[in-house]
Length: 262
Image (cartoon, helix red, strand yellow):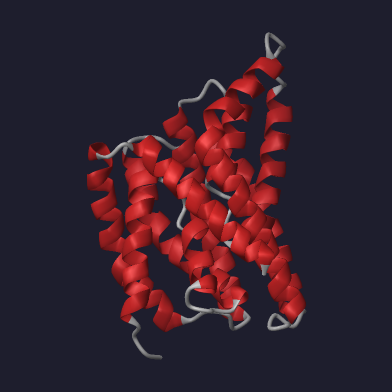
């Protein structure tokens, strides 16, 4: 286990972007580890899941202090995501994770999720407006139906996050905004972050159990990312967030193309 300063520098840059844009670190960190440092996709995902669990815990504390957590949403998502994460970990434990097939599956899923994340970054407002027009003046679904959809969304996120470490941020928040149009967006975001903590922790611990965590890399990433997130959060009010999001979306699209093109 040797300390690599470049990992800390990467953590600093990713942390700053997370602080500025609010986009989950998995959308940035996992592809960075795979493409720039040549880390095997399974190890990159496992290490990034533990990294996310630690960094999102701070976000949970902040949102909790401001009362921005809807525990019914958190519980519904967890009811679907936790069994899905355990199922995915069980499947991964039973395959040769170093095989070309498994690596290709992870990178392909990661690539398409980055494409979706880029679209959500730029067009979330338009997507939500289309959803509102499609719903129109119809009666909102019954509470039990909304809970069922929330659990189903949790299951989907559990599969995607455990396989790629991406999905709980842009994708999850957008769908929750459609399911719960009357809730404050800050409450949706806070609930999504809180839900991501146990999901990424379970995923990260599972990858640790099957031997896919690089602890030296995790330590180096955290050293850089924690001050990066703080700096990004302080810089955010002084920057044009829309421009940052467009540049970030374009970057994710290029990274997705490189992952999908092999």
